[in-house]
Length: 93
Image (tube, rainbow, N blue to C red; front, side, top):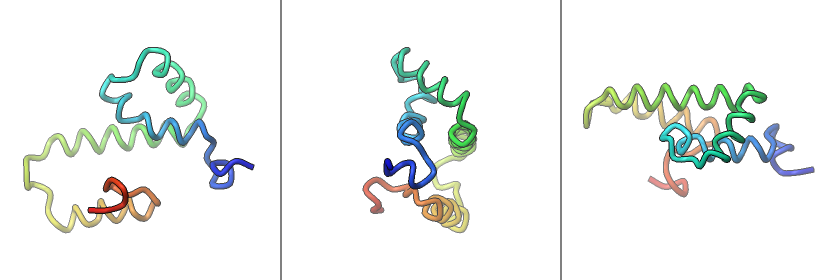
């Protein structure tokens, strides 16, 4: 059994999660974009993830530097950490 399958996500889901930022920035080559869009059309979980990231980027883009209150930033970081996804590269700060 693949490691991704044990956690309820396929290898396609892991790749989709990794490509979301490039997808939203329009930085994916056409072939990879089509493959990702095909996966998103068939995978509700990844489609929800894409929309969550899209909304997060939009909301954060509305804020100026230093505009995120410490309590809100802590809750956001907690939400990422609670999902098993670190908001920090390599799990550090």
